[in-house]
Length: 187
Image (cartoon, rainbow, N blue to C red; front, side):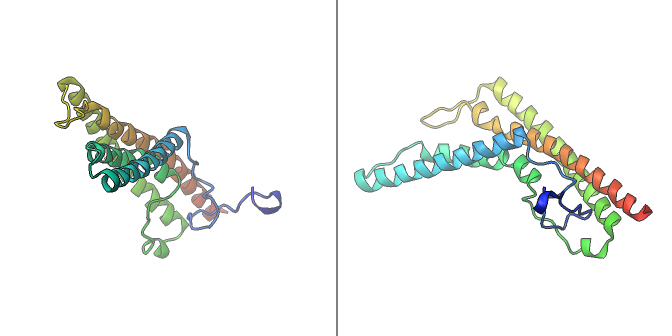
C-alpha cells in the first residue's frame, strides 16, 4: 500500500521507484538462501578475525580457514541467486528499453527471462548430476579436514534449483506485465 492507503501505481515497464506490481516478492526458499548467505558471511568475518588474532598473537594459523573460506564462497554465490532474482538485484541494460514501448519492453523482458530460465534449468540439471556422481564416488577433499566433497557441493544444485523456482515466479510476473501492456493498448 502506498501513501494514504492507496495501492502503488502499476508500472508496465518496471521503471518505477515503487515495488514492481507484476513481480512476486521474495519467497521462503529465496529468503532461506539469503539468511544462510548472511550467516555464512558473518561466520567468515568471525573466522577471519580469529585467524588474524591467532596469527598476530601466537604466530600460527588456523589451517582449515582457507578450505572453509572456499566452501563458504561457493555457498554464498549459489544460495544468493534466487533472492537476488526476486529482489531485482541484478543489472538490466536499459539502452534498448528506452527505444521500445510498453509491449516491446514486456516482450523483451519475457524473452530474456525465458532464455535465462532455460540456461538455469540446464545448469541445475548438470549440478544435480554432478552432486549425484560426487555422492556415489565418496570423494573427500585432499586436506586435513578430509571433507566429503558432496557436502560443500550440495549448495550448488540447491541454489540453482532455487534460482529456477525464482525464475518461474519472475516469468509469471513477466506474463502479467505483457498482458497488462496489451490491455493498455486496447483501452
